[in-house]
Image 1 (cartoon, rainbow, N blue to C red):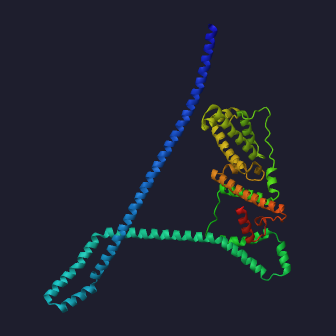
Image 2: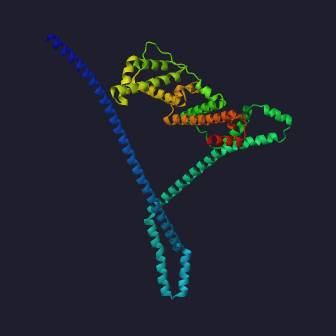
Image 3: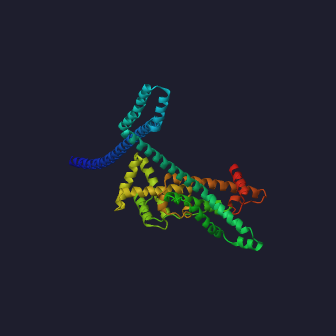
Amino acid sequence: MSSELDSLRQRIIELEAENAEVKAKYIKVMDENAEVKAENAKLRCALEEHEARFTRLEQRDKEKTNLIAKMDDDIKEIKQSSANASSVENPNNVVRLGKLEKMAKPSNTSDSTFNSNACKPIRTETKSLEDNETDDFLDEEYKRKVSDEIRQRKREKKLQSELIVQESSPAINTSCITDLSTTSTGLVTPPEQVVEESIPKESSAESAIPCESFGNKQDTPPQKIPYNQKVEQDLIRELLEFIKCHNSTSLPNSISSKHIPDVPVNVDLTPGSVLYLAHLFDKAEKTSRKEKLRWYYYSEEYEKKIVTLRSENDISDQMARTQIYDEMELYLPGKKREYLRKMTQKAKNIYTLFKGIGIDKIGVVTSSADAISRLTDAQIQNIINLYTDELTKSQKLIGVNNCSRTRGLPAEVPAFFQPNAPSEMISSDMSQANRI
C-alpha cells in the first residue's frame, strides 16, 4: 500500500512539474500575444491619427481654395470700383463737367449740379478710408498667392528641365560617340582601319568618358542607386553572363554536372535534431569562405525542422519557431532569440534565392551573403523569374540546334550570343526562340 502511495506521489510530482512547464509556456505565449496586441493598438492609433490629420489637411486645403477664390472676386470688385472712383476723383474731369453744365444749363441748376458732383469724391474718399485695412489685407494675400504661383511654376519648369536633361543624356552620349566615330573615320585609310580594329573595346569605353562628362555638366545631380537595387542588378548581370558564356552544347552539362560539396558536420550529430541545427548555425556564423552555402544548408534544415514539429505536435508555425529558438539558446550561449530570428530570416533569403536558381550558382554569384540577405522578397522573385526565363529561352535554342545537327544542317550560334551580330539577326533569332 505504501509503495502505491509513493508511486502516486511521484506521479503527482511529475504531473505538477509538467503542469508548471505548460503554465510557463502558456504565460510566455500570453505575454507575446499581449505584446502583439499592444503593438497592433499602437498601429491603429497611429493610423487613426494619420487619417484625422489627412482629413484636417484636406479641409484646410478646401478652405484655402475657397478663401483664395473669394479674395480674387473681392480684388476684382475693388479694382473695378477704384477705377470708377479714380475717373470721378480726377479734378480735370470735374472742371470739364462743370464747364459743360454751365454751358448747357442756367446758373442755378449748374450750381446745384456742381455741388452734387463735388460731393461724390468726398464720399468715395471716406469709404476708402474705412476699408483701408481690408484692402491692405487683400492686397497682401493676393501678392502672396501670386508669389506662390510663381514659385510653383519655377519648380515645375526646373523639374521638366531636369527630366528633359535626363532623357536626353543617353542621346547626348550616343551622339558624342557617333560624332567621334565619324570624325575619326572621315579621313581613314586602310592601315588605320587595321589599327583601329586591333584596339580592344575598353578603349572605346574610355573615349566615351568625355561625352559622359559633357552630359553630366547639366544641372542634374547624379542619382544614387539604392544598395539593394545595386545588389539585384549585379546578381542579374552575373547570372545572365553565366548563361551567355556557355555555348549551346555545354550549357545543360555545366548546370547538371556542377557539384557542390556538402558541409562537413560532426558524425555524432543526428540530422533533424536541434543540436544539429545549432551546429549548422554556429558553423555558418563563424565561416566566411563558404558562408552562402552554410547559410543555405542551415535554412534548409531549419524549415525541415519546422515541418516536423508542426506535424508531430500539431502546433502553429509561430509556436514551432519559438520552440526551436528556445532550444537553440541552450546550445548557443550568448545568442538571444531576437538575434537568432534575424539571422534565420537572412538565411531564408539566401535559401529562397538559390533554391529558385539552383544551388550550383553559389559559385557563380560574387555578392556576399550579407548583401543577398538584405534583398526583399520581390527582388529575389524578380531575379528568379528573369533567370528562369532566360534559361528557358537558351534551352529552346539548344533544342533547335540539336535538331539541326540530327538533320545534317549546320548548327548556328544564336545571334544574341555573338558579340558583333547586327540587330536584324538578333531580332529574328529572338522571335524564332519565342515561337518554339
